[in-house]
Image: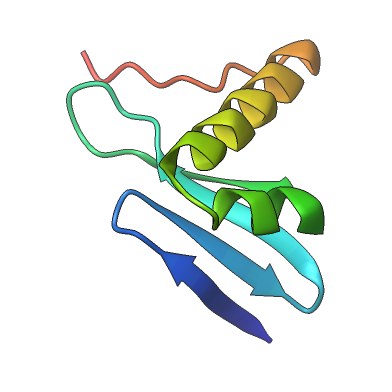
Length: 76
């Protein structure tokens, strides 16, 4: 069952039957929500505070870039 286990307004952590996802805004001028899978350790770290959540988001974006996916969305 899909359940939001953390939500600070800027990003959310979701547990979907043991898989963890981070939901965040990647839009530049308008809101564009993106959701990416993360590890349980990353989920726990992101829930600690803003600095840790930022590190997790940067790690996710680096992984996406290495996989050939553009993690950023331009709304202009």
